Amino acid sequence: QVQLQESGGGSVQSGGSLRLSCLASGYTRSKYCLGWFRQTPGKEREGVAAIATDGRVGDIMYGDFAKGRFSISMDNAKNTVYLEITGLVPDDTAMYYCAAVTRNGRCKPSWYGLWDDWGQGTQVTVSS
Image 1: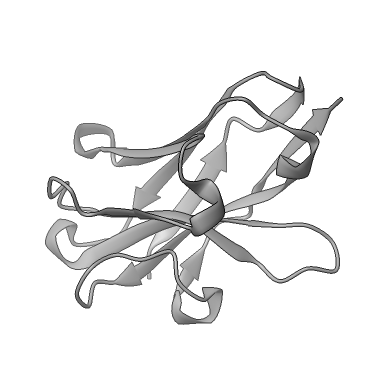
Image 2: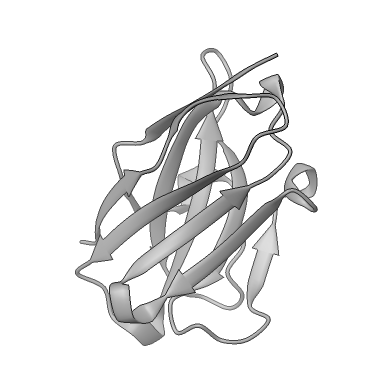
């Protein structure tokens, strides 16, 4: 089981930026995907971005809504995956979760039910 701990959320004004962090442990570097998801009350958890833990160049995918303002990256030396969000808007307000799944092909921010391990989440609140 992969252990995940998110941090970096907070309250920001529209137009601001945040970098979320997820410290991961208990995984085999060559075999996992790490991803970011977000959820608001009453809505299904949606995939933001996913990355391979082996840092394979180009093996990053984003949810359709996340292309442009969201950037996922991996620091293998720190076992940490980051999600940088720029140009924040109130619709970005959500609980953001880090997730892990055994790699099977490309890493995709697909349906949340396919992912195995989850962190507790970090809240992002954007005011207008």
